[in-house]
Picture: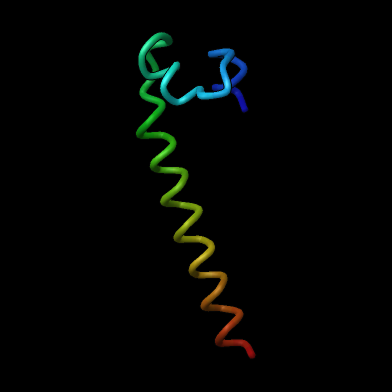
Amino acid sequence: MFLSNYCGNSRWERICFQECGIMALPVVELVGWFLLTFLSRVRVFYVDSF
């Protein structure tokens, strides 16, 4: 994780957003939304295939 190494903290979303000045929270939300969409599509694909 580039951002966690850059900010140097386990809770890197909050640290980046406040101290590093990076818009990290929207990035986290976008990645989470993408993963949820991808996983839901994969699950639907597997359900339809069986």
